Length: 89
Image 1: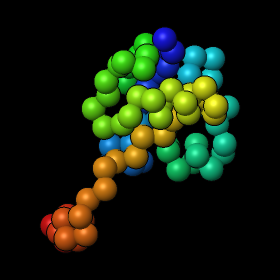
Image 2 (image 1 turned 45 degrees about the vertical axis):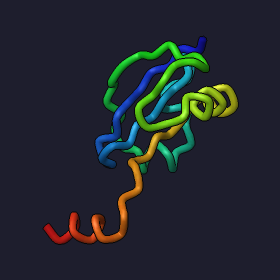
Image 3 (image 1 turned 90 degrees about the vertical axis):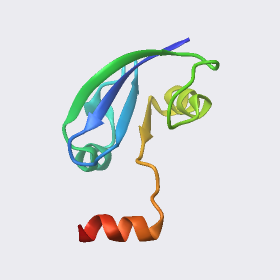
């Protein structure tokens, strides 16, 4: 079981950052901090291999938390047509 905190980006829609316990936002690389923007706390999670997450593989999250202390969840990719339409409307 691995404890982590989840934060939402104020700059990028549907972008979330999972931080392992003991890791602070200021510990992350400066470029990541700048691109992510101001972190907004969402929730605390207790993750295990049998835990299910909506958009990401929990195994990848756990591996990244163990190796790097964080996991960056990016928004799902949209088909090109949908992306173009979204920007035009």
